[in-house]
Image (cartoon, rainbow, N blue to C red):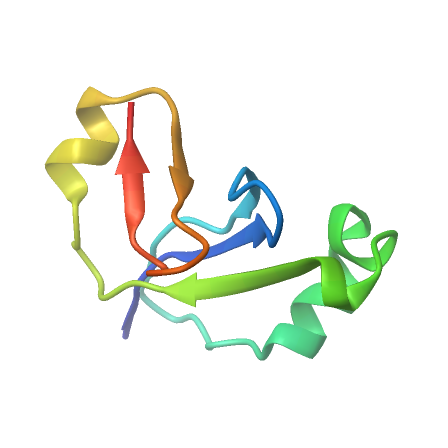
Length: 82
């Protein structure tokens, strides 16, 4: 199974809080609630202060290799590479 990235970001700034990365092999897709319970960086925040996007496996792979930083446009939910 191939699972694309899930990127959690701050609703106000678009700054990335957590990038779960891509997974491949004998893996299972988690829900956002499972992630919140598993990652303190999420569970310590107010749930209304962040959101997430799911990307297809392999999406933007070249851009992620080339750019060290990125954020999410909170209105369009598109990634902005810098």
